[in-house]
Image (cartoon, rainbow, N blue to C red; front, side, top):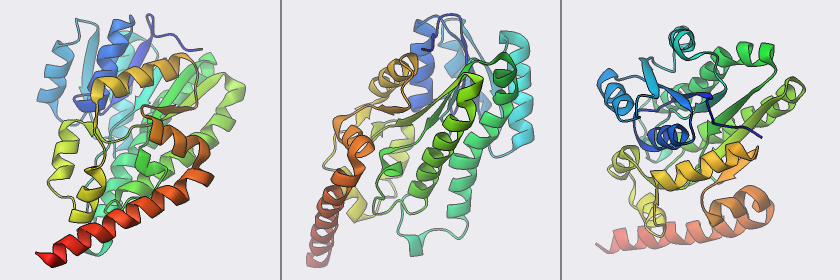
Length: 269
């Protein structure tokens, strides 16, 4: 079991959206929260809204040296990291053959390697103290490949594999590992995604009511407190996570039908 009371929680991608909502919930549980993101002004604004129990450091998660330096500075003020939420990430929807040349590499660098770099920065202290908790933010798209997310989905599948391997390696050290699988969530990042979605992707998303960031944060806090490896915030993702062998083929049939329908409507215009 992991307690947030007086814990030092470090959150990457913590200046907005799910990361900020998790920070707010953690502060309510009595935690000291450190936020990491690239832009200073949003970080400063987010930190000021966290009741004096927070601090921030600007760093690009793609750069291990920057992340390590940021973590070192934050630890100097708030003590060793007890809980890491590796949440930094983004998606640029698009068909594979229409994506910008470097998009696959860019999303892998931020979404996957950014989490690797954050974990590498906090693990030495966690292992020496033989306690701690790592939580990686994946996605429903990390359980089921979705039309239009050919750059994004692989990064989120990769986080699942990383977490499963780390879970095994870190268990003898007393360190817990979790993976969060949020569905579509009403965040600034989701608004940006909607501006770029192919019609087929929009048709799939249009059947799903987005969760609020606070709902996803509440599920995350509960999952970490209860030591769950798999954390979900909605029933469909939970079905995919726990019964993908049975549910995924049905989900693929449904989304394939939605894609065909969207394409027919497009041709009819």
